[in-house]
Image (cartoon, rainbow, N blue to C red):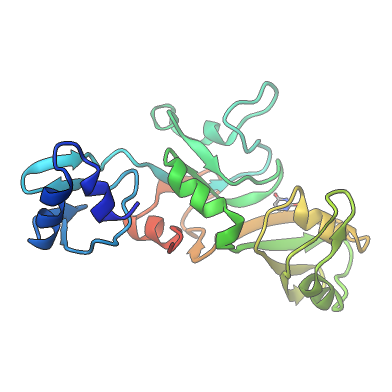
Length: 234
Ligand code: URA
């Protein structure tokens, strides 16, 4: 919601006072004074007017995990370890996954307690790209570059995949960049050509690369700039 509307809806302010506070530069969002009426307000922004705290910011948690092989992208599972088992016990509460990776896929996985942020991230309208490093058992024929760019028809879902970018690295490995995340999409795209994916690693979501300092199973908090870079502009 826009900041002017958000302030105007606060019962303790009312429309007139909200307008005046904003115009007079008496409103701060995350510590920075703002007079921008159209600025978007997010769930975990700290919002103050003069010395009055209107919304308490801290509380938003955003983690980047280097998912290891052999765990489930879920918060509970009866049979297998989950990605939450990678986190210290006191870090797990209230987190959900912003996207998933298959059991044996490694790489960048995001966890958060901010549903607004994760919904924006996964919404097809925002087309956040995901880049995978793919290793295959068979040689990758160069014509897959065009085939993936044109899209593949999946009869089960009755849809054609969005244009995907394939960058060949050598005969058995490539980067594949997708703008969507269908069920087992990478494996199914290669499988269409009789090619088995033997290792799959996600190294980037949109403008956010997996931190190379994170070993498999390690995680860290995102910086404020990293959280912002994955927020949709609208
Ligand atoms: N596509 C797959 O097949 N598996 C993943 O984990 C991610 C994308």
